Image 1 (tube, rainbow, N blue to C red):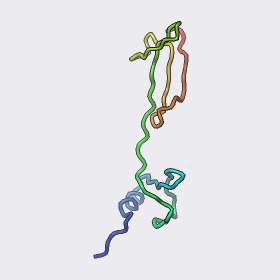
Image 2: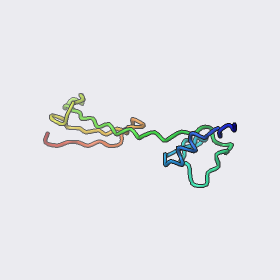
Image 3: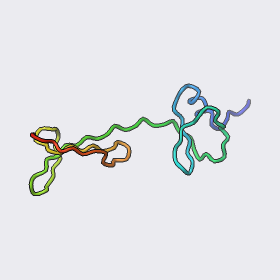
Image 4: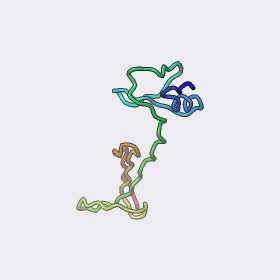
Length: 98
C-alpha cells in the first residue's frame, strides 16, 4: 500500500475549500492556486483559525484621571475597542451626556 503524501490532510482540506495557510520566516500566508506542496521554504501548514472578535470596554473616568471599567454603557464616558487578535487598542471614543 502506498503511503499518503505527508501533507495529505491539508491538501484535502484545501481542496474542500478550507482556508489553508503556510508558515515561512515572514509569517502565515494563504495558499494560492498552483501551489507546490513540496515547497522547501515552508515550515508548517495550518487551517486558518477563526478571527477573534474585538473587545469593547466602557470606562468611567473622573476629574482626577482615575478610570474604572464598567459592565455597560450606563454611567460611562469612555469607550475603548481592543483588537481581538493582538489585544492592542484600535479605537477610543469619548461619550458625551451619559
